[in-house]
Image (cartoon, rainbow, N blue to C red):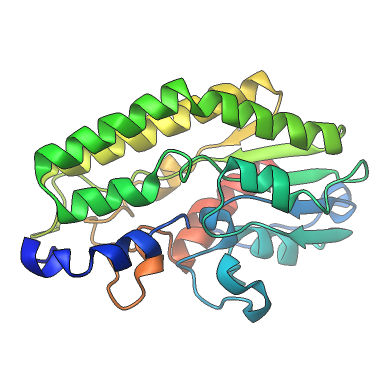
Length: 269
């Protein structure tokens, strides 16, 4: 529920700090997946922020035991599994901090990345706390970054992965649309704001998919899996603003990981 502008202002710093990106059955393992040396990279959508049951040893990275990489590994028993995805990661974090386990023997890599580079946290903070016009302007600024700057960052990240794992199958997962338009929400953002945010998610996915194809990787689109489960759908697999655990806001729930991300990755892998 949207707070009044006066009340919300008092929570703006908390929201800005916390938002950073942060029903499929188990797949049966076959000979190729069982032999896989699998490394899961990326941001909070891959680490599982919002899905609960976090690994205490992962600290601020908030790696969840309900995240799709863990679920896939449990179902397929790969030869090895390394989970380095981290809440808040940008493309440079993947290159500089997450590629340690990736090597010439790695046969499968997954990641989601780019949302934080594009300013996910600031966009959502702006839209929740400021005017409709300011929200739309901030979304347009982010979209300009996605088309102008992000492709180069993605290309550098994908090249670094390929250089370290020349024979690996690499699956890049996209992001869901956040809102069902004309849905069940009686308060919160306006329909104009929700539509603008959805359009930014679509553009981010389109831009990512093009870069993925240019590098010969596979793109796993989760938009269809989340259709009917967006915020305002009545059966959301995404958190809205969560003032008691602000970092989980706008992230997939455990159902979103198992019903949205896991089947998309399983199909691509």
